Length: 590
Image (cartoon, rainbow, N blue to C red; front, side, top):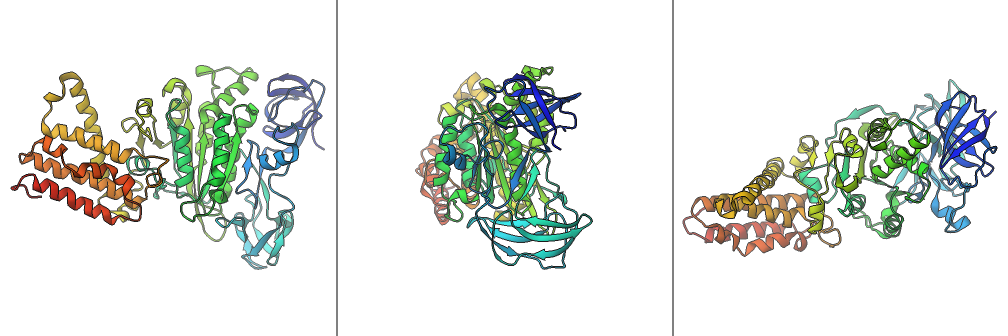
């Protein structure tokens, strides 16, 4: 029998119900006559405190609260890819067709279509042993994604007694039957999974494969590994949202989860308009055929915002368990933390720094620790990865505020956006002094297959940028006349690197995406130019002559003029650099 209580107190999205003996923490409940979805977040005697995922206006004391017996869960199976969900996996597009643009409370629509038939292909035979995570069949969900039908992680190992022949089935039809200690258990193409519970894995692997994003400053200077964690903090207007869109569009992850967590409605509307028209750069198919969008804007119920990142993580882990590389981007965790703060204040909990609850750090840790490159459960053996990147919106760009400082404890890549760079139209506005990546050494072996000297070239480029910062301090104190020609060369080449390498236009057809091989050739071009020019200066060439080289504008325009499949043009450019520097003084040989 489900637990049934009565509402006694309501404060915004939070309510208290008495007579809830037997209900469990994080159990999903239905509140009021309209059966609004809620979740138990605190228990005190027979009183349960519930956060409601819909607007509580009009809800009154005395209305019933009914327990479901299970936690807030997502439905996983064919039909998830290409959908737009809210924070608790309600399909917004199908709801809008049912009730119009203004979604009413209490509307219940299945997360995946129950009547649609999918072509199921079995992959094992009757009599084989199966265990949690074992693949028993597959469905071509989209032309880009094959959904593998797996034994759910909470099943016991057993023997396959029945497997459906190839054919058309709905997600509710039985496609297999397994005999284990529980008897004969039916398996369909879908199952439910609690959003706050990480899906089990066999073992974690080292993050040694880079996530190629097509953005030079991210891939070369501050690389992200598949299965890694990162954050993008920045003040208003520094380009966090555009950066996350670029990651979603161009990264070489197989499945993309984009969570609009408390975003402004106009920005989220732009995402919903833009993504269905984007083309996957690797297959020329629609990008939505490998994307799931979760839209929970700032004017939607605050409690659903708090749940949205867990909903996204549960869906992402499902595709990771199939052996896919999954990228989850959350925009932004600051607004998620604000929802947490609001719920905490409704519960009258003791606030910590800046009003955030004392458990802010542990909640952020629970989210980011779900990332990883792993060997998943079941047969056949598979390796999947879940990469998590969260945007942080610190008020006034203050990186010392609680959400940013707590996030830095759990992520290994820090892409700090600088308002000064953004105001000078330098995009991506990643500050190369404040940012860092802990994956440079782990992904080195992969990049060495592209070019053996990648690590040394990257280190040289980064040292030029660091040296520029030191020299600019001298210039501010003593003026540019105090610098030697070698030091002025550092400033000139650093400016060239900033303009010709670090800056990248998201709206230019050629420059929007830069392949890993083109990134290396551009990196090598600027580093080699510095070495050639430094040698020339040491042999008497003046810095003014170096600055006047006709090849420099061509180097700066290379990001626009050389396509990813025209790398031979870099050989011509390198030859031109050598030729022009050699011609400046006959006795100089390189």
